[in-house]
Length: 62
Image (cartoon, rainbow, N blue to C red):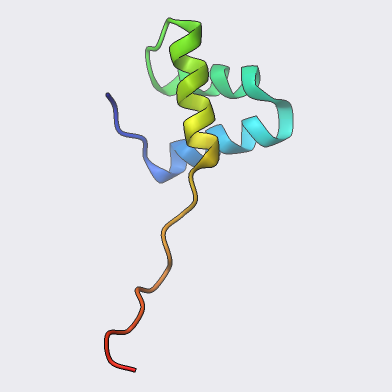
């Protein structure tokens, strides 16, 4: 298990959407030491699906 910062996720997502899965794997490996291709590809696919949290939480009082 490892933690990914928003900046790292953004870079990995950009590589994924602009150049494909394996480019995103290369980007992931710039930040993390993941040697197994299957593990790296699974991590990239998970990160590519992430969405940022809402900017402001909904108000409890309408």
